[in-house]
Length: 206
Image (tube, rainbow, N blue to C red; front, side, top):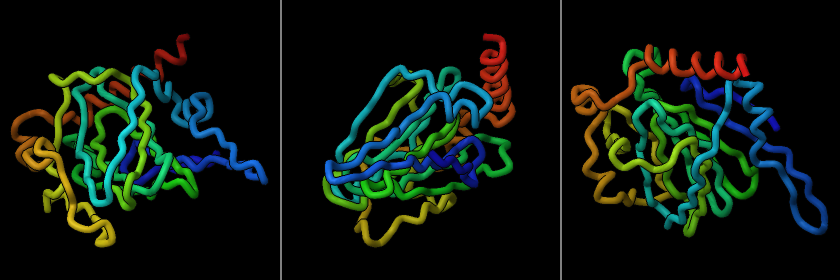
């Protein structure tokens, strides 16, 4: 597989090698050892796996969880296509408020890995898009937060082909980036750097 760091630090695009013949296709869509070696720390201690099915135009996010533990995520599209967004919500980060995106579909079968403390969202480009997520912690509603995905201060570039974005009531009511910062819910860049470094130290000591 090929791994490329996105413009938001600590997030990556993963392109697997697919083997195709007259029977179909086989690929390894997640390899903990390869990703961990690339990161220099454990990639993902799997604690939960999620699947969502979304109609065209459904916009999910921007979601994040308190650290520690937070939720690192490994995301891929099993059917259809979505445009996946990673948003830097770490206060003090040199790329705070910026985002990057990756097309996830059932053709190239790419995946996105985002570290704890980053915001995540996607918009479905096709009807019935199936997205699976491997996550590093179970869902803890008291530690889950959101940022308005339509906040112009973030400016996600939503493709017109997806139509009018369709949000849940919870996502539509989420605060903008500045309001979330003022409320103190966003992670701090310096604290996240210590968190990532501690993970690497733990791996090296094992």
